[in-house]
Length: 307
Image (cartoon, rainbow, N blue to C red; front, side, top):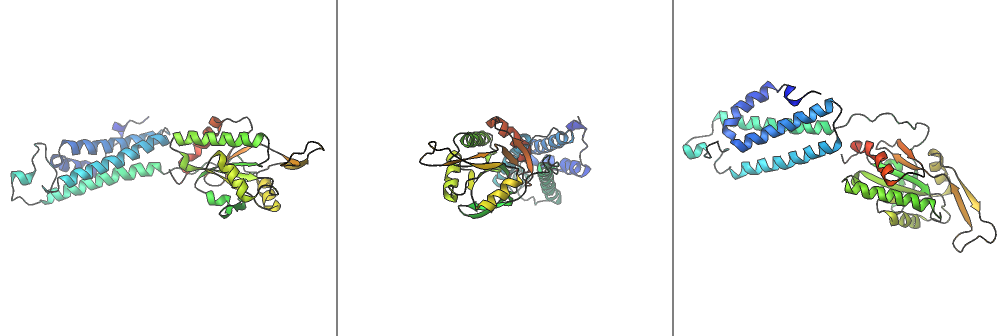
């Protein structure tokens, strides 16, 4: 792996640094060196394909905080009209009638260039490469159904990772278990600070009994980031067909009816991970755990709008 020290520095930046460091003071010099070092580290990590989203996030957070500190230091020393030197005295204190020189002005420009260069490099490395082709080219696609707020399409969730599940409210065990696992996965993602990049969708396969309002309340009972969608039979059939969801109404035998239902719906039990570009990233079976769901989501987080 290429080490940071092996990456050549820009001659222009080096020249600006030599002209600037004597006017900055020790703390300012340390700040600039840290910016350059972390920028080069992040670039070398990416060149070896070891760059991790958490590392980039930490670097960007540190960079923002450090720039804030540096600017505050600049403002505090504005009364003296310049940065403090290594002796703790400004040139204006040593010579009250000294005027800002062109060298000083160029030094400030050099500092600005260094700051901009460091920030631009870090931001550029957060910018991801194109997503790989989906392995699930024979399924998926956009659909439009009804939400509490009105018509909603899967396309409306572009830029987020979507966890999609098809079921129905009167499902005795499979659907509640799947939604509980999705909710548990979302809680894990919240602990990782990634929950804002993910949304959940629950599509009912029983529009006769599951109104939009009931479906949404049912979904949000498990987690408030899971939206419930319903629609007419044609809309739901089209959405289910796109994701190859098999379902069939099964009439209950005499004597087995309950006060809330006289039929059940047999359906396939899959959790779909939809990538930020709308294509399917993974399909998980009924044995999937919350951790499995999180691991299936993680590869696509770097392509979300919140990255």
